[in-house]
Length: 223
Image (cartoon, rainbow, N blue to C red; front, top):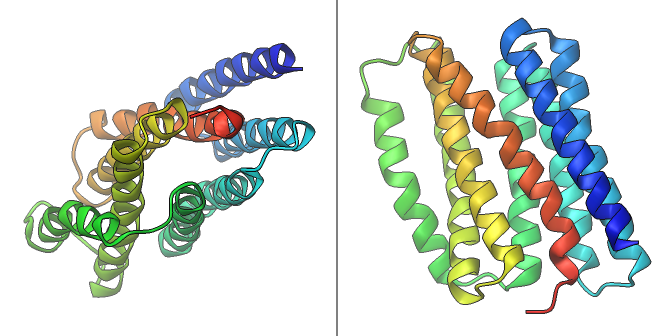
């Protein structure tokens, strides 16, 4: 069964990346929705693999899949209403964070690392003159969102430091890519820079989601 699951991971990875390229070039919401559904399906495939193998890390897989579903919804709503999309993404990050905590229990160091990541991000959002926020509400939504994704990323880094295995490496890489992608999104939406930041956002976002969805398969790996 593992060979079949690996093959499906490769196929869906290729299809998602093709969808990513198409969305970068044509910017149709339907393409974005289908592409995002791809990483959810990838997560489902890998979760089924965990269930079939009666793995003890099933909670991790379930929490990760829920995070992927909220991310897909955030993708769609972000184009309709930015705040709604950001809230859905933030909920997804909370589930990602919970999935990381299901592997290694939360420690105060996780929070400290998250705050270290958050402080410069917060200062950048609030003080950088390049941003043109449409009111304070959106600005503070971005700040709160930055806090949540910083804590999620910090937890993934701490997990890898504590246990250097494939699963924690994938989670750390996926989280860092996600964090970078959101920085590019912020610059693309509110800083009126050239199209390069938008391309960088999408070029790192879908690989991040692929890696996170793929990580579910490795929840059963021996440490």
